[in-house]
Length: 343
Image (cartoon, rainbow, N blue to C red; front, top):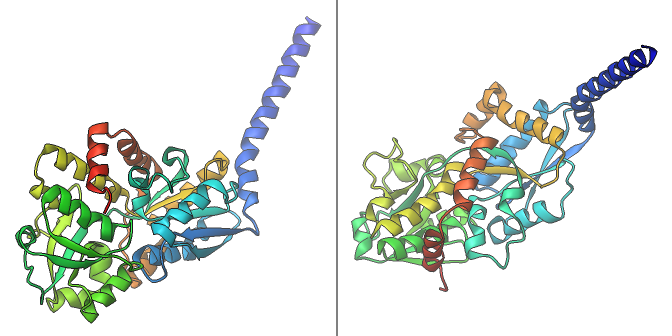
């Protein structure tokens, strides 16, 4: 009997200890951030849509993290976020003090930039995405290309950024849709391409995010300085009812499914992530802080003032999109690779 009582007492003490340990875990994670600095890697050049969003997040997310850490942005735009993504995966601290906002092209980079990719997409810790996107193709109103159908017969000179959507999208359209984009690479982001359009160096762009375009260049639309030729996304944007969808020009079912693979990344167009190996309790705090931004009146007011569209997407939804990308059939991935083969 005494032995039974002793065992019962020991079990009760052990249970109490486990409960205390479990209940202290969130507190320990919360205490971790007090007095700390979080570095937010922006995998894009200063001034562009990604960078503006990174700086918006940096101004507010710390207020939703226990301990109120400071958040600083570090730009790392090289190779369309490749350097930033590789760093976050391989060499940045895995303690929850480094996070990133990378260009969505990284979600499919393994298929066409395999030698440069030093990360496993499925092993990142995802915070979520700040928005989904619709790609639009533009032509200056002074160019001979006025409609999407014109692109099947007339050449349009567009500014490109190597291995990033302004280059990748028109290359896909050329191969999968039979269009005639002539891509001039060497620009570092849509801001530079926009300036090149205004200087007359190029006639348009093959892929500009609609949410960024209407904020950065509302005069282009109001004064009809450009024609919006195409929209690229899995679903039609209600703000562009008269702009044809790129997939409607697909030459066949395989080409259509290949475009669907590409456009899947646009459903999580502004992905935020943390390195593998970050403790689960700290990731829970970071994800909760990220989603709290969607209900933060100061964050939303700042976004409106900065003319940035926000539509937060949870980490679970991002992981779902990643699963669709990583499970694509060899037939589709092969067609994607062949479309973006050697220049």
